[in-house]
Length: 561
Ligand code: ADP
Image (cartoon, rainbow, N blue to C red):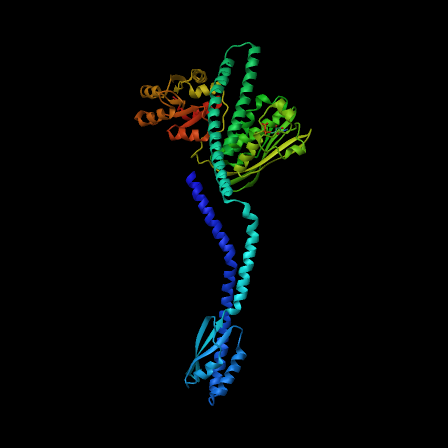
């Protein structure tokens, strides 16, 4: 630190010195160079004229040199420019001295040209023309003086800014920048840790509520549990929003490129809301599926849509919510789509509309207290839509309702290539359908937390999956070697051996190379997902366990027996 301050000080001193010298000296130097250039040009012109005149003079007056000298002087005066003199160095007829007397010697010669004189093609003498710089001295000195004055005027007000203070301020700024960068890294680490720490007990709370709801209970208890389940869902949404928002802020949000169908995405989206709509009708108006396969991130597109639909449901007591999609521009390989979600709810006052897409903003705080919400939803939608090369805006009248519009540009294919067509949109299936697909499969659950073991085991047993439990990574490696498993669900943080090392160990054995291994963890950041894949896992399921997501993923990886 000390060393860098010292060298910084030196550098600043040298730069300041160089700047001051340039400011002081540049104007007179430029002036001098321009003057010399001018003088040289003038000299060349004089030389040309004088050579012509002298040639004429010598050839036309071959009789007496005294009168010639007088005439020569007249010629020279004629062509004389200030600061210029002409000297005859030699003449073929030897009368040089006489002519020399006529010409004044110069004290301050600078620029000189020598020329030969020709008389009808023969050399008759040599002439030297000299330019004196004496007349230029006054303007040069004047310029020097003026530029000094101007520099003083410029630097005088700055004399009180000590260089030391400047250096201290610069190092303070550098230190502050380092602190800010460290704080930003600490914020990301804190968020990742908090996310993990909150998700683990949330998995316990949500899972236990689900397990309790699966048992025989009196209606009143069931009602309490359903309310608790709803609250935990809202809490999880807030946690997810905060995590998404910090991912976007940190530039860590990336979009996937997967093939999907628009109508499947729309139907699945409203399916999720059916139990909550009460008196409100959910209507989809979309083009028939002639658009073909779209290429983009269906989960993130669905996230935007779900957020708008859930807001519309939240603020609409009766009437209808229309979800409309209009293709704005279709080419062979791109589709620009216009989505809108129109409700007949409360509406939003004009003055509140402009700020709704900024983070932590809500139109009416009293409404927020009633309905809940973090105020991050629309800010996240805006960023996601922009990442899909689109825009988001709204139209709303208080008492009439609101319409949220957004556009996105997606890739398009008339036929699916099936190359990465793992359909990520959740498919709602009932227990019977799931049992048909998954019953009898053998799954190894590597999980150290007893509550999480109970929850996962119960969910899987419910559809007929047989579950063995490994208490840590080491045990999981041993059990895989002897058991005949269809799939492994692998927690990441475990004693003895963590999930990454256990996966690497399993993959290094011949029997473990084809075995599907899915991370099941409260680590929910994109980089955690990448780490799981790098360790050799096939996928990543986040906690709290979402049954739908779990079963969708299991169906992808478990081959029917
Ligand atoms: P939140 O998570 O709080 O719902 P959003 O960013 O999704 O955050 O929404 C911000 C605010 O915008 C809401 O609190 C509400 O005041 C207003 N708002 C959003 N959608 C609607 C709607 N369809 N009707 C009325 N108000 C809405």
